[in-house]
Image (cartoon, rainbow, N blue to C red; front, top):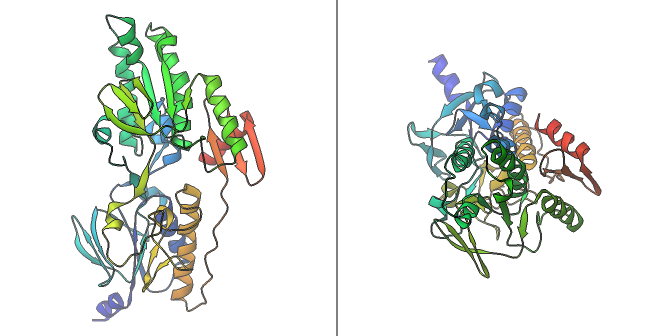
Amino acid sequence: NVSMQKTEALTNIVILGGGFAGTRAAIDLAKKNPPHTKITLISNKSYFEYYPGLYRVVTGASPIEVCVPLEDMVPPSVDIVIDTITAIDIANKKIIGAQLGEIEFSKLVVALGSETTYFNLPGLDTLSLGFKSTKEALRLKHHIFELFKTHMHPNQNELTSHFHVVVVGGGPSGIEVAGDLTAFMRTLAKKTGVDPSLVTIDLIESNPRLAPALPPEVSEKILRRLRFLGVNIFLNRRLIKEEVESVYMKDMSLQTKTVIWTAGTQINQLITDTKGLTFSERKRVVVDEYLRVAGAPDVFIVGDLAATQYSGLAQTAMYDGSYVANTIARELRGKSLIPYKPKKIAYSIPVGDNWAALVIGPIHIYGRFAYLMRHAIDF
């Protein structure tokens, strides 16, 4: 009876998502060790994926560099549960797992992140290659190696389209993979007896400039660097549809066998289907000054999902996870809560080997030093 009473008195803190925000929240909550709590981290994978490093898996890095087992990251006091959540019932304070069924919570931290969207363009979901996960990055790597294994073509036009890669999306991911692929594919060409000039990398962006979140002068420096590496840049272009060997745009057509999609993300479909949430114009969840859902003070929304100023970035996700851990710990100890203040973000975008753009407020650094800084940040 005594042990049952103790169990009933526990505050069940459930964290959904094993990404930047979820793992940070779990680590910090365990450190703060609020009284009479049970912390559970639920993820659909047993490992944490370091998304900013995934582009390097495509060009030869080991997946081990970007995958870390969750049990190596979070303290043993945190219960790790591997399951896919199929529903969130805010009103009744429970979630539904595909394997575990109903799980009740006292406090819920939703850190499920974003997923790829193809903007309803027919064919893209099945025919293009993404790299939002290690599995996708390895699939893309395998595909590129296969291109060089099967390059016996009867005419020059077919050979040219065979080694033509189109990267859709001129944000950080698209820039990173385009910059890295240029040198990587030309090196592979030399090793396999292919003329390196047959390798063509195109980068397509629907906005008037690359990396539109960054200052215009930084976008221009990145564009010049990509052109120096031999990447063709197409700005103000929107994809209409994609078929097996053609990319059609509003004003041009490119023959290609490889389309890499980095253009769009949307919040997790599970969140879109959850009752009791309000969404902003950017289709993020509206939260109060403590990252809580209106009318549900025990439900916190963090990272990519939250309608905050800098959501969608890894640094913001980590900051949110830490903030929510602190807020929950303070609340359980009866302390006053500190309102959330968005944290300004530093950007570091590598473009090919030994060159990056580093943006910290008004400070812009380019070249080898910025590249080494990016590797230090990754480490």
